[in-house]
Image 1 (tube, one colour):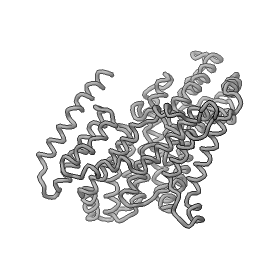
Image 2 (cartoon, rainbow, N blue to C red):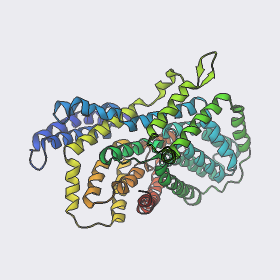
Image 3 (cartoon, rainbow, N blue to C red):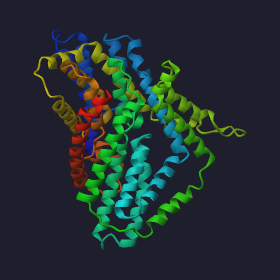
Length: 483
């Protein structure tokens, strides 16, 4: 397997720049402008490197900053500006808040509290893990959430194995498999609920601002995202516990004590946890009521990015122990910030900017405007299905980076609101449920050893179908009502 991955990376390393050279020298200016050809060639290069992971994805995202000025697509100032776009700092602020939650173990306390509330039967434990995973994943990295939940879930399954014996009771295997799959999927599903929940959401919001100067607020996203998350979680829970992995386990002896012991190990709510919770709550309050507060002030002073960065900066200003100069976060904690994701956003925005300025997006719109009328529901369903299929094979961020500008062109061609198509496509990019390589949470939970490849493919396939229906219905109802 490792040899195959190495060969794929090696092929991709040379194939990317080769495609760039071939496209540059094959296509002649005519229908496409010289700038369009350069952007198209660079897009092929970047997609090849992203798909094969021949180079680290953030490094590939730096190519537009180099190529566009050299090839005359834009100036250095224009090419570098997207890497400092406000939406990048929105996500940075969200990352810093998440670091505060993780550093002081508040996320684990929240998870264990929820698991204690949902009961200790087989299905109750699965429900508890799903709810806590999804709730935490709304605010911190899906991967970090999955990594945090795995050892807790492993402790529960080990306890159950000791009580029942792996060989003696087939219900154990169904429970363990269902639990691990539920956590993996809930980590991805939870990220759909908020703008900062997962990188594709931030990319799409950034594109809406850059292409159409449309500000998608934190609140308006959540009005759509929370129903999306809720329906997807219900579908996932029912599919796992009622259809594919019916465990019929009663209350598991010793499990309540295990969860209680882990919770007690955290001790009482510490001062620093209370402070982090306060900062996080204040930030969420301003995110949710930003538009109302701006209305009261009579000025558009508050912005989601400003609020996020203010919350992040507060983490460094609020002391735990003023005499010892200890604060909620220290600069050393910032090494844990996923800087590569921020570079990836910048590269995606720069490439999208090139696609717009070179006329590629407009060309797509012109092509579709010449087609016959298409039912918006069918269009949403088709584009969502394409996004859902592609996200199983490539990074969801890379997919949205490339696909959303094309979707904008299609929306312009049919003269419909672009967010009607872009938001469902973005939700679909988080529905990578079928394979371990599709998304990091899948890989993390697959490594537990309780999930077979066939189990993940089968469950992921049916969950994809359910989410396809959910996204389409929300796309033709709630999305169009809100936007």
